[in-house]
Image 1 (cartoon, rainbow, N blue to C red):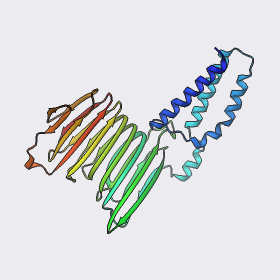
Image 2: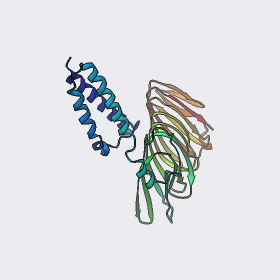
Image 3: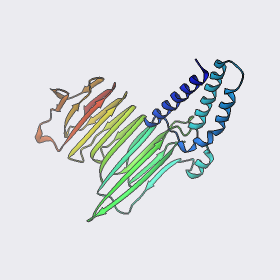
Image 4: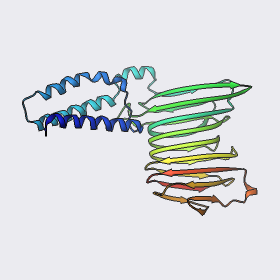
Length: 294
């Protein structure tokens, strides 16, 4: 087999795997910095004309591409990043507003790390995430004395490979929230008992998630989609709850729920004791999902 065919095969497989991991939020690649890697092209061209056996060329190519991948996943200029974000609180997003919003939505994408949610006094505050970077966009809409805030927060993983990432996300408790969480490899403790939640869309790739729902909004919709994850959901007894399990694989425990067949489960609370209702839709791969009452 010719050396050129083997080289291009390895090259395209490597690019494809990196692209896939980036799209799944398992790693972060800043494609804008690829031009910094142009010297590696000269190195690979030099290897290709060295008069040695093809197997040695392939080994050298693999080593060089490994070094290039390491450089690509590491911040090109860490000093510049640290100038933009203080080291003591490498991420400290604090958006305060003189008035509270009626409704708000948060779209969060986080590749890796530990996420903790807590109530706050401003629209959004994020603390922690040593060595990370982020993109934050907040859009406000006001009409007829009605105000809405749309938050897009993306947290990039692996900006410093040697450090663990952890974040505390504080949200305002006044608005009615729509939440959309796209988590890669993460451990998340999501306590929503102090928030008015209308909709929650949780997409977890390989994650350990503890989710506690509250009773401050009367009609709640929760969608859970996972790959290989462990998810624990706590539902208050004061809320009625239906579970729609659309998954065939995995381990499922629905405590204090009655099986109605075809993946449909209902809570056994007397209707006159309820102050609201929660619908949970579950679609998973090979995961452990537990729903309990508290």
